[in-house]
Amino acid sequence: MKYVLKLYISGESERAKTAKEEAHALSNYYYNGGYEIELEIVDVLKNKDAIKNDAVFILPTLERVFPLPRRRVVGQFSDVQKVFSYLCIA
Image (cartoon, rainbow, N blue to C red; front, side, top):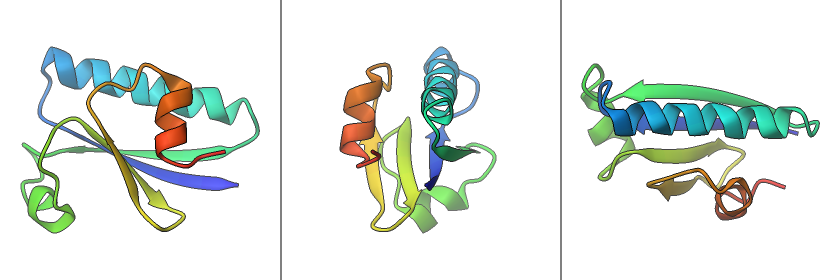
């Protein structure tokens, strides 16, 4: 099964760096389990339209874009099982 995730961050702050590390760890965790996870990182400082177009209000935000319906998790992503439960990823 293939999943597409988007991580919305703001610049290169410690919080943004931690969110990127945790999102990559999540991707690797499920890749090893036989799932294909594509991760796109969106820096809203470089792509200001993303906030309006995707209605992102809190950072960091991790969104499952595919398969539909979209689902979001906000904040920390260190608890792999909870994050994937919230995103409805097997």
